[in-house]
Amino acid sequence: MSLVKISGLTVRLGGAVVLRDVDFSIDAGEIVTVVGPNGSGKSTLLRVIIGALRPEAGKVARAGGLRIGYVPQTLHIDPTLPMTVRRFLDLPGRVPDTAAAAALEEAGAGALAGRQMTRLSGGQFQRVLLARALLSRPDLLILDEATQGLDQPGSAAFYRKIAEVRDKLGCAVLMVSHELHVVMAASDRVICLNGHVCCEGEPEHVASAPEYRALFGTGTQGALALYRHEHTHRHDTEAAE
Image 1 (cartoon, rainbow, N blue to C red):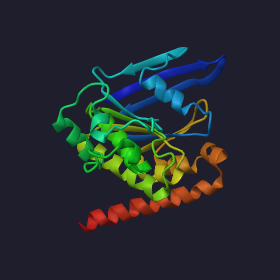
Image 2: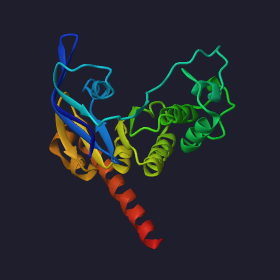
Image 3: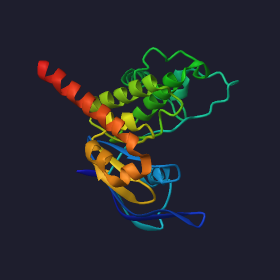
């Protein structure tokens, strides 16, 4: 069942067409990643999906009662403002302690409740933002470049946590990412966007597509090799168990 289905989407910002004739859907439980160069309309697509931006043309259908959790690229907090992680989760409205503790635990941030937000590392900060997004028990979790500023091990650990959250909660995940090596290992489906949908499908298919390689170069075969390695390793491990 599609949680979100978009047909013929066109979006104009400041007189310029940012997206044109985009068809997009995401089904319950799948992990979909949108990739594309800067200015390709990735964040614009997310804004349409969450209802923050009205398209010029096209149809946007959302499942009834759809709950969306959103993790932004970053969030600025005044460094002079004393605020613990637990207090942060209470903004803008109070959250029961049990719900806050469960969300922090699911995000891998269970030990951080008493820490000051301004004292968190980049990875810890993103996990707290993830916990906040999980408070609504979302059907669809959206992440907009959520690992920007993290090093490669930190990014990989964060995306592994996202996969665990999907498996536990059964939610769909929609990610925008520039980290092609992570995309290949973490996604069920990849959409290559450059003002329109250039290509889409399973990671292995997209990595081999001429449209994808025209945007990201032939070096993306390294991402495909990593994808194959990680999936082979995972399948071998599962078989051994």
